[in-house]
Image 1 (tube, rainbow, N blue to C red):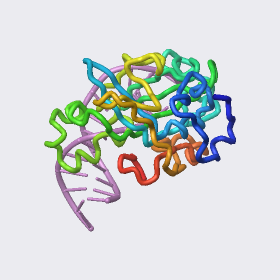
Image 2 (image 1 turned 135 degrees about the vertical axis):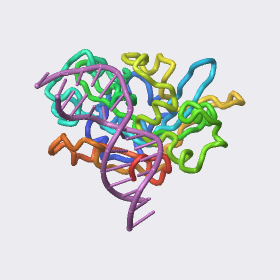
Image 3 (image 1 turned 180 degrees about the vertical axis):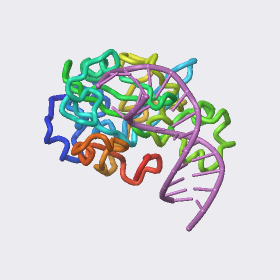
Length: 231
DNA sequence: CTCGGGATGTACT
DNA sequence: GTACATCCCGAGA
């Protein structure tokens, strides 16, 4: 896919070729393009000969060394932020508040440390596995409150998909955690992502320290999706 | 529903 | 020592 540039952010309904949009080039677009266009795609986790399939419904773009909300603001390249400097498509997992993980995918080319924070996903396959990872119960035994909150936040979805720092720095298209335009259902059929939804642009969450950057509309979510963390 | 406090490990002034 | 791209639970409206 050609690089479509910044204006792509303001264009809905970009023509994406099925099965052809999540290649190496896709992740080398700028962070806002990736954040917006990764919505509706599948985040798939494989372990123990199992797969958990989810749909990405909420993201945030973090736009590198000039973004006061970003870990790499002022070109802060440390052991922690190193994966962000890798070419687009590398996994960056960090620990937040001592107990939760957050999943990011690097964007843009090498040494342009932009990224996308995955903030919420919708479960598609593996409800019981997800429920067990979150609450040590099967899905049917969850309260309605627990069902509603099962993957609607960056820490929650990492718990649900068993994502931790062991995945850090891996390449997303060559990992047991990956993002795809389709998944294989239990009948062996390919199910393609649906691009028919509206995208809402909103302020990013919990970045009060970021001065003017806290007001940028760099959070994106699928309109009316019930798994979005903050409406 | 909203609010507030506590939990908890690590990166980095 | 302090801050942190969070979550959970209980209290109160």
